[in-house]
Length: 293
Image (cartoon, rainbow, N blue to C red; front, side, top):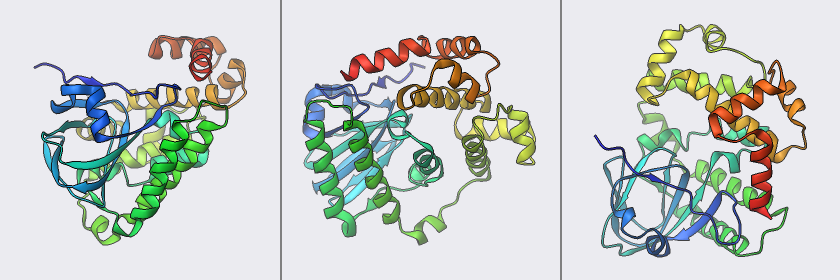
C-alpha cells in the first residue's frame, strides 16, 4: 500500500515562522491539484468558513462546509478538498513548536479538548464568536504581511492563543459531555499530561506507568490503538520538542539545557537530538535564526 503524501508547512514569503494564514482559493493556487487528493498534514490548521456551501473530507469522513463554522484539523490527520470550491474560508496553519513557547502554552496545548475532539466533531458553530474570530484572523494576516522583526513571533503567538481560547469556549459543553471518549484515549491523555508535567524529571515509561497505577503493556496497547505509535516514541518526540523550545526561546547554553533535562552529559543530548532531527542543537538554533533574519 502506497504511503499518503505529506503536506509540508507553507511558509510566508517574508519569514520562516511556523504560522501562516491563507484564504482557500489562494491556497489552491499555490498547492494546485495536490489538495484534491488525500494527503497527511504535518501541522495543525483551523478552517474558518465564511460564506457558501461545500464539502471537505477529513480522515475519509465527509464534512459539510457552512458559514460561521470552524473546523479544527490536527497534525497527522488526512484531508482532501473537493471540487468545486464554491465557498469562502480562511485557513490558519501552525505547529506545536510555534505555539508552545512556555509552560502556560504547553499546559493549554496538552489539556485542551480542541484537538482531542477532532475524531468526533464535524465542525464548531461559532456564530456567537464570529466577529471576534474574523478580527483575529485579519490581525494575523496583517501581521504576517509585515517584514520580520524579533517580537513578531510573540505577537502572532498571542493572536493564536486568543483564537484557541475563543474556540475552546465555543464548544458546547453538553455536546462534549455526550462524546464517547474511549478508555484507551483516556489512558493516553493522562499519560501525556503526566509527561508534560514531568518532562525534566528523567523518568522512564515504566516510572510514568507506576505513577498512573497502570502496566506498561496497557499503555503500549492504548498508544497503539489511538496514536499508532509506542509511548517510547511519543516521549522521544516530546523531549525533542522541549529541547527545541529551550533552544529557540530561552537564552541557555547546551550544557544548561542538558542539565535542566537531566541528561548525564551534554554530548548525550547532542547525539540524541541529531539522531532525531539530523542537526546538532547548535545547527538547529543557528538555522532558525538565519531563517528569521
